[in-house]
Amino acid sequence: MQGKVTVPDIRSRKGGAPIVALTAYDYPFARLVDEAGVDLMLVGDSLGMVIQGLHTTLPVTLEEIVYHCRMVARGCQRALLVADLPFGSYQVSARAALSSAARLLKEGGAEAVKLEGGTHMARTIRALAEVDIPVMGHIGLTPQSVHRMGGHKVQGRRPGEQDRLVEDALAVEEAGAFAVVLEGIPRELAADITRKLSIPTIGIGAGPECDGQILVLHDVLGLTEGRSPKFAKRYADLHGIVSAALRSYVEEVRGGLFPTEDHSFHMLVGVPRERAVSGAS
Image (cartoon, rainbow, N blue to C red; front, side, top):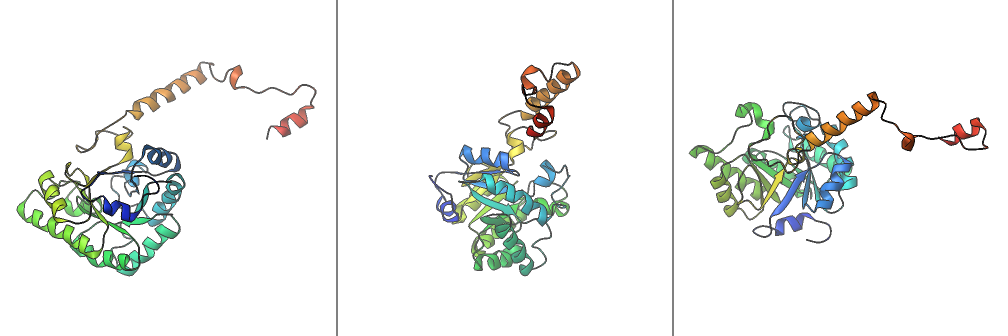
């Protein structure tokens, strides 16, 4: 796909070429992600865990998402930019959701928003869609529901849960979402939901039959602490590379090996010291 990716472009990819999505949280990585050719870039509330060092996404605020979204928007030239509505910014009422989503588009530069929940969020999704705010749904393992689920656990393994997730997916579609994230659900169930929907499904821990895939950038690059989730694949070990570079810096400074002549400045010949110093600024 050439040129700027739009919401209609993503919708048109249903059953076609797989949609490639990644998270991003700042300008330098947004540029790299965009240049790699991803179709959709998400400023996720996962920043609470991978950027802020939190154990859940719950403390992340709307102001923080807006702040990070502004940075990402400067580096996102091609991909569709989607921003998460964080916990507490949309559950209270449709009016609260409208206000929060408007801030993400107006102040953050997002082109669409994502929210978690199925049937119980259909009214909110519809309210946003009716005022032309594109919405991406998110069902299955929904991190903002971590306490109800008793942790970050796979959803939909039991018959009753499977029926509920199918209902959630259909409700999200009927309410007007242009796509839906399926997280942490069995491959077979994700495939069934994908067949039933006319909008694209984007999987994360939901198998290859989805219409696209999304991962957390820091998992892909090997920057997360501890073990990566089962569904994530590390394509690099930047933790090791960065650690080695920083240790080398520490050793060189302490050993008198840095800075060298190549990294030093000198007075200009024939220029008074006062002028040379002031000119350096």
